[in-house]
Length: 277
Ligand code: FAD
Image (cartoon, rainbow, N blue to C red):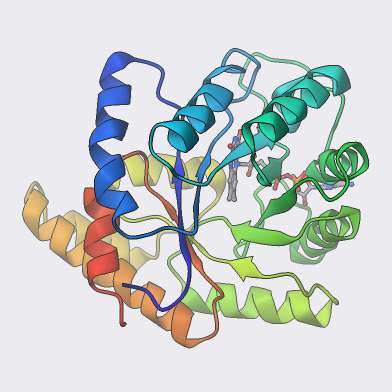
């Protein structure tokens, strides 16, 4: 077990099969006593009801402190206002506010262009009602002009009212430490919790990483590939690598760990079992 608070991220299941997968994972992950869990928000409006439904189920049926993600793709001011009211009625006190990404083929976003505008709106609408987490990028957001601009935009989210930040995942601890140092130098004082992606499936991880700009170090990709189809060997190796990363992060002062679980328990549990007490 980790010596810092941990949290788990889930995506809202849309089919019976996905619901069964999440239901199987929940008791095993809950046993690790997460500080809270969060539920992602799909872009494009089509999944508008999935996130609140899942948040409600995690809170009511599983007794978890579930926090919704909300993105600028959540629609108009009025639609976002209605969602916020729904979350407050459920008793949610934490929210993860994001810009989101436009799904391919979709031409326009909602009323807000950047996450900072959404944070400002949430603060104005429900002042004090939510602890707001935002995203940040130790390896720089893929659309940012450069690292300085990205840091300025991160600071704008903090000035708009963010209380904490969760990073995009990374496998290079130094990228995190350098980023936190730069943030502190820029006057950002909120906790910056590393986002951790346990490795269950290398092909899937590579696809995600290409999309979100997270770097898989060459040595790690090569070592994972060298295990070929030996799933057990990949699992063991990957859990060792990610746990070592987590232990370094905690030893270096990370205030918590946020696991991208992809709704499965096994890879996250394997990492947590290897954490220094
Ligand atoms: P922003 O902070 O708005 O930044 C987006 C880009 O715009 C950056 O390059 C930034 O430098 C730039 N920028 C910001 N402000 C300005 C400005 N004023 N002028 C010019 N450029 C600017 N996506 C989902 O769809 N649903 C989710 O549930 C979800 N959960 C996530 C959880 C975490 C912890 C993380 C790290 C990411 C998550 N994402 C999610 C992905 C996220 O939506 C994307 O990474 C998205 O591309 C950026 O979101 P953001 O909130 O960081 O955007």
